[in-house]
Image (cartoon, rainbow, N blue to C red; front, side, top):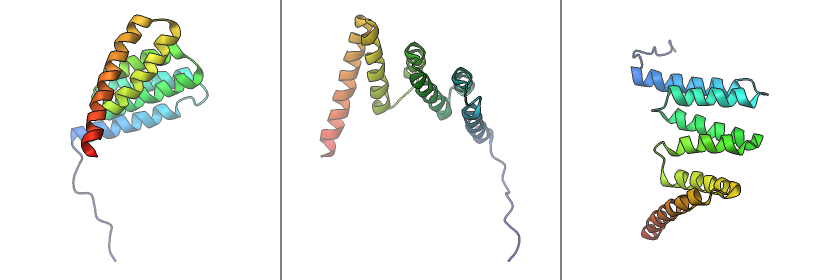
Length: 135
């Protein structure tokens, strides 16, 4: 049979950075399983360190989910607002804007909620055009 093939190439710096970001995300997920605040801090640290990579957005989403489950609506909204400042696709942006709209309406910040309603309507119209085109 023979030996297993040897890896003859070394990953480039970008590939190493992406792999390091994935490892950091996994480490954040394992951080203090019972302590939500430490896990959220670990996810935010991953987002800070790897802001230009997919793992940053994934870490912010995980932090939002943890804070929502904990019942910390203000903390989840702060992280959600940060996630909305990153480049997102329309379906993801729509979902996060709707979550933020619900929160703002719940705490009585109507002016901000109106601005979000306009952006939500624009995204829905864009998505509806795509949907009609594909029929």
